[in-house]
Length: 365
Image (cartoon, rainbow, N blue to C red; front, top):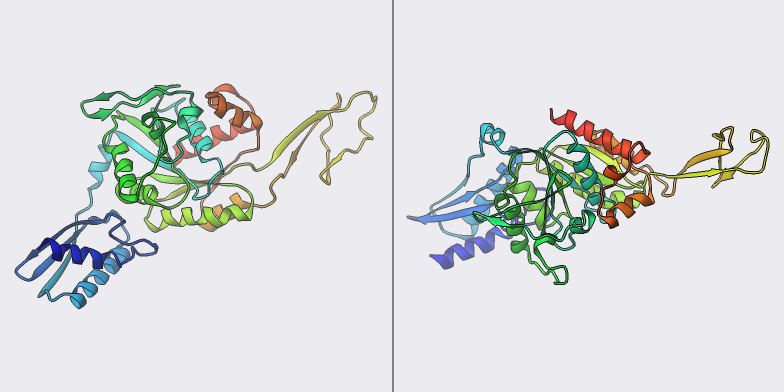
């Protein structure tokens, strides 16, 4: 019997989940195979409202098993979804993923500063799901190990926010080598085995890609929505769009797009002249028109050419909720372990983070 089930699983692993280049077995939707009186019943756990996907999966399985095996009947059934009251009664009201699929675009910076802005009004947690290269311990300057109470991890609390990261658990000098099933289990445990308490928002900082972590998250966790982070260049969009499309395919709403590294604000002054009005200053073929009476000026330069954020928001038909400038203080804040928005106020970027948080809270209200 076990060998027959093994053969069935091997066959099922040749069926891809609709719109993904990944099979349904590694996707983790198979829950049980029951064989009785020449009847096979295959039970699936597919957490999606996309009925077309369910129909396609059911038809693909029925067709394949009927063709390759001699069962009298093949039954494919789905575990019933949790009703909406179960979702509403959760201690975590909103779970928002911050993703990109592209590395190095600033997802962790956006995640942390968004969490800090939201925490000024709401109860907030931040989960760093980058198992291979967690950055949260450095960005908040904490190497504390979480305590375990009643078989649940207690998040690290700092800045009025609850934090959890694989970096708190794994020794920073130890190499991290994880295979797909182990990654999926670890991702699930960060939700099931962490005592988050009552939260208004749990921000989830995703690693690059559309691999096991992302698929486990969108398949097994109820997400309120996702924020897509990109940079202006068209090259960035090639990967970013894969992440955006992944959320759309599994019916996770994209709440908005954030463009990072949009511009660089250059400030300067002119000294030793009596009249500044007759002076033309041109930088990168851009004329500076804002010279004040004291000779001070500023100009916003496009370091990276392109309209990546606007392009992606238009393609997805969602708002461009923020454009963040290149600012050395952003990276310095991350290195020093003090979030930017808690150290700087009334700057262009701090105002943008505040605006992003307001749009997210309005969207979920």
